[in-house]
Image 1 (cartoon, one colour):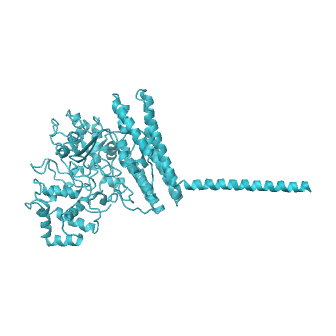
Image 2 (spheres, rainbow, N blue to C red):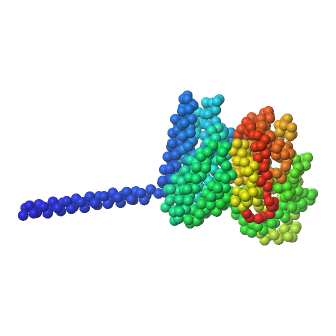
Image 3 (tube, rainbow, N blue to C red):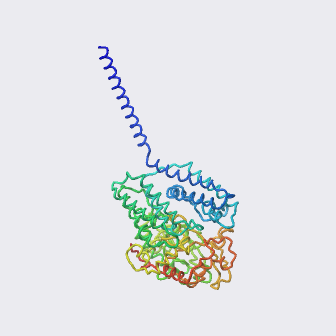
Length: 606
């Protein structure tokens, strides 16, 4: 009996132990599952981002300028690799910090007004690269750049807080796609090593990691696989030497496909964007009239009702000579449609010092006039109206002209809440100018797959323009001006040392931006214009000094003003000379001529 009871007791104890064990395992698994559930997509993204930032600054901290250059170069390359892997996230959430960390080795100048001018020494990877890997190392500049760059990365890493919604992820990815196509293919940020292609591959790898983290968002798993396959194929294409890459084919076959896939992902995820930035949310090409959100480039962003009618009204005003004090000049007097809205003169008259720039694509900028003195097209119009050598009038005069014209007065009362105010008049004219973005050129139609007419010489010219010649490090595609992608929030100034005459004997005495604030480091600084429609906008440069594109290319090939022997201490060209052959020069010119729009002045959508 005792034996039987003892057996029963042991059996019950064993059963209880098993139950407790199973309960314990169940609790552990439940706790594990709960822990996994609490690790959000954003947490994983933060960890990915943080790891790359930490490795970036650790490798920078390992650089010792007293060590041999080979070891330091390895540390630099590893740091740069992790920096570029962090780039898609870093550049999206830390735009100003990213700009500092990745800017050219040039002074950073901020001019708010004459009493608030800041001139900062550059920091970041390009400063490190140019000093660490140059034959004449500036140890002080290098030490400072290493310290400040590492410190900035640590500060960013210690303050990570990604409050992302799903649409932020798609904006982040789109920025990375556009950055690679517009600056990554041109060695914009790797002037010494020429490593931008491999580094763009690193950024694409991070995009793959991002979508792996967000894989559960995909209803269509085939779409996720298509994206991953496209990224792998893009990385393989970029895994080549700098001069061999066919940039035209990369953009046509990869950038465009990535944007198309991104639109499909947007639909698959059922994304509703709260607003549009510089690029339209549904864009599938960089080279289309449907690429850009014009409101982003306007300082009158809320007034888009009846916009097409306002554009038509602005066109009438643009051609009305009554706005000038002598009734003899309209906007169209200097900006002639058939000449891509220029006038084909060196300067409009003897009183004007600068060449008339094209108005095509001018609305897709953030600063205006050749010295960037106006922040909007509406503001630029004021400058033209009040200039003694142009309209020589004032805003009251243009208001009176409009109010005394019954058709104008009725139109403004119908279209604008406050009628014919000077701001509304200027907005109407500016809206017309902002519509002069055709994207209908031979190049646009070919890269968008509408034509197959580009010659091998023209394609080669584009590749040299984007590659060896470094043209695209200032004239960024797709606008081919100085408005910097992918954010398009700044229109750059450059100092290139333009001569006074085509004989290249003397530096031009127009000091450009310097005349506004008297900042010494801005002497000779002018806005980078678009080269779209360039074959129609002769003569060239701010002073109209060159009559042909061959003369322009010769100037750049020799290294700008410094290459001609002028004293240009702050010249910003990223090269001493280009060493281009005559065939290469002619190929670039052939490419530039493919940028002529087919229907200048017409408001046709691509």
